[in-house]
Image 1: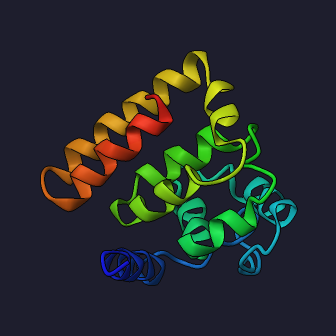
Image 2: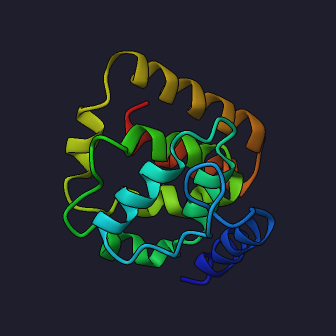
Image 3: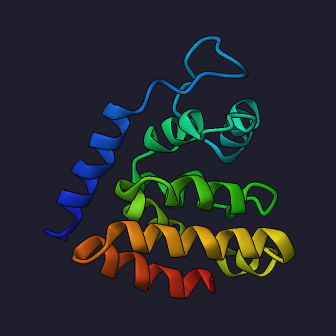
Length: 150
């Protein structure tokens, strides 16, 4: 449990660096989603963000400890690969990626990733681990990657 505090503070640091998640091409900041349906609606509003800034800001608004509650019915398979790719772009999201593995039907979401999405996710894992280089973050990413089968 003591190791979770530094990772949580890293997620908080990522949230502080990221601009507020905004719907569409601007608009008002998105509220932290409390339900899976709210998350999907917010994700749909920010999914066209070519640089993932708004997607990462949305992910940063979610505390890793809240992921199992937010996705109590499982991570929606239609957004799963994009969520993973956005999270892999920010080293501070290691704990979020670990938390996703604890959601119901996680294995089903992994199974539904195929073809080009699977190749893109594998490439994103390679890049994230290379960027993390060594240390705790790299080791945690490498361990989490096993669950994602990428």
